[in-house]
Length: 177
Image (tube, rainbow, N blue to C red; front, side, top):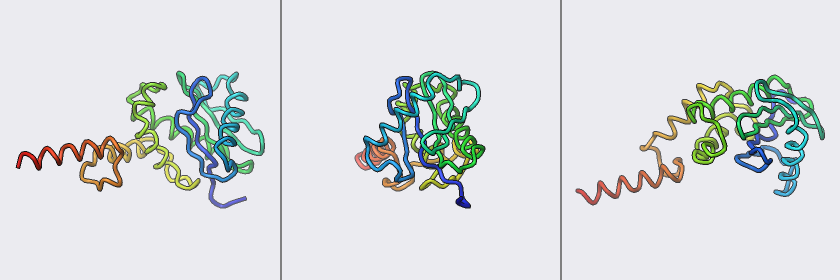
């Protein structure tokens, strides 16, 4: 058993089991088809449960999966068979709540897809290389909000939309002077 809890993946699937946002932190699934097969298996085994109010925990294929559903989205956090379920549930709840804060309470597939860059920033703030960095939704949402409003950041650290907006703004300024 490792000293530091490791997250294998975080999945955000729609109500049909299709990818919305996924991040893998482990080489347990070396190919894209293996990843998609795992996602399908997880979705199929959990879709009949009622994980709407509280997170549910299941174990299969030597993985612990903690999951929760809202509207037309299914949130999953996977860890190894020896991982602490409470830590996995904390990661899930932090991701779930941070997405809710960022999307101002409207958590559905359409809203997530429109703000996919912010959802991926949430994932990056929560886990890095499988190591849990943060589980407090307020801190996560705050860091994501800082990233999304930081026009002074180098272009390499901005999202594409932010980079285009910054470039457009700088071009307009240079043309006016």
